[in-house]
Amino acid sequence: AQRVTQPEKLLSVFKGAPVELKCNYSYSGSPELFWYVQYSRQRLQLLLRHISRESIKGFTADLNKGETSFHLKKPFAQEEDSAMYYCALISRGGAQKLVFGQGTRLTINP
Amino acid sequence: KAGVTQTPRYLIKTRGQQVTLSCSPISGHRSVSWYQQTPGQGLQFLFEYFSETQRNKGNFPGRFSGRQFSNSRSEMNVSTLELGDSALYLCASSLARGSGQTQYFGPGTRLLVL
Image (cartoon, rainbow over all chains, first blue to last red; front, side, top):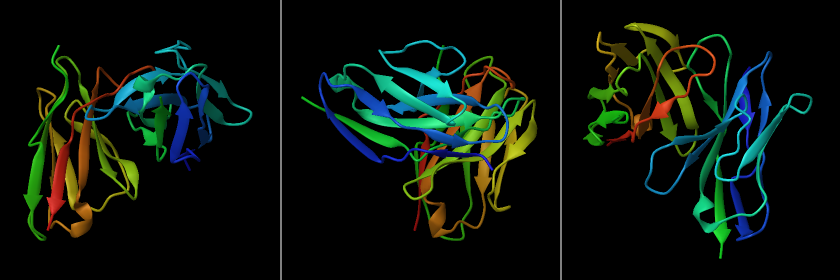
């Protein structure tokens, strides 16, 4: 069964500190992994995807197939990073069916 | 380009009634997926439509149905509403099916069932 687990519902760090949001997945095969973000009063939007291997707003995420993890990291947190973050996977092969984790609410304290 | 739009934004219904929600994808996008978001269950996949055909369905009862029109606009319908159907219903569109597609989400329709 496809499953995404985000072990932390809430995460609070100080501005300038490193941030790591954890994501583990269960999937038999080779999925595509994503991080979506939802800022206050805004719609859900894509932050980054593992196949593009790019850094968005200073965030990076590395897919570790051995540990089935896709943790999101940023070396220096900023107050505008406060938001709800969702890790999600989609199976390769066509279906536009995202499986989401429960989300982590990140709060950056000044 | 205009983003994904959903109407109505808010809806209040009573148990037993039915409801229809509408989604207009980004111009040129042909794939539309629907999700239900609740505090308890999080974001759960409902359906995927492409070329007016349902391609995938999530684990929801038959009271939940949908369709897609030739202009890619999509509607979902929930019949015989239950209290547990209260949720934020999100629609997402992508250019096509297949790997590498990005789903763009609408603002959602918040449904309250009394």
